[in-house]
Image (tube, rainbow, N blue to C red):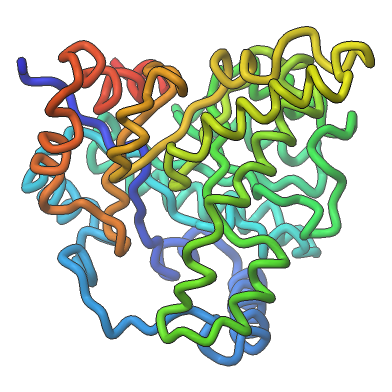
Length: 353
């Protein structure tokens, strides 16, 4: 196969406090530290997270927080560019800050991410977080980020867990219209809702294995929220990316939605103008690291809706064996489809040259 640009559509960086705090007043720095301490206390002192005794190849590497080292690790792995997530909760814990802290903290995180990307803006592509409590703030920050060259935005997947209105509420319409105008995709990264956090607290396994296995299944709710609510019908220019949730479950869920639209009379109720799956194929995409069955059934998902990722430096990461993983996963896939999934679709979705 001819050499193709390889883009990881889901990788991660850790923005150190000093990088964020350099853009933030002391009083707002204290808000971050207090919120972090409160979360740790609620989760039993360790965030409720699994044991880290198991080390994987990318664990603890400087490339997680040092952009120059990150570029070196990308070269080792043969990856040309990465879409970089710096806040798994999309800044959800900061949405309730007051005294001007909310917008200040979001902007500080985003400015720190811009600093990280400045080492090589064509290869390092941060996903910027958007405050959603006040729509005016959200619109302002999206416009600021678009002017700064942002390629991806992220919002919390479960706004109701924050005591906020669901995304289909009309109060968010100015935000969707603004994002639609910019053409920047919205990321919905796999994460825990309130139920899963409760489950994690009771998970008896050392690695929190029950909890860890379930978040992708709950991403079905995200598909329903954007499609069945009519959001993607009202804002057809929006682009939504499901991140780190895998592929294989999605065709069944889309088939389920299409069947329900017929069997439950959604068409008679004028809920949607098209079959639910049509909105997926037009407006949504999903990332994956290793999902051989998903690749086998890729045409049910739509080849143009799939984007490969390394998930560096998390436990699922394919680093430094990404070339081997690609060779294995795509050994029976036509070259044009392979090129699309390992880089072409991400380049198109994120407007990369």
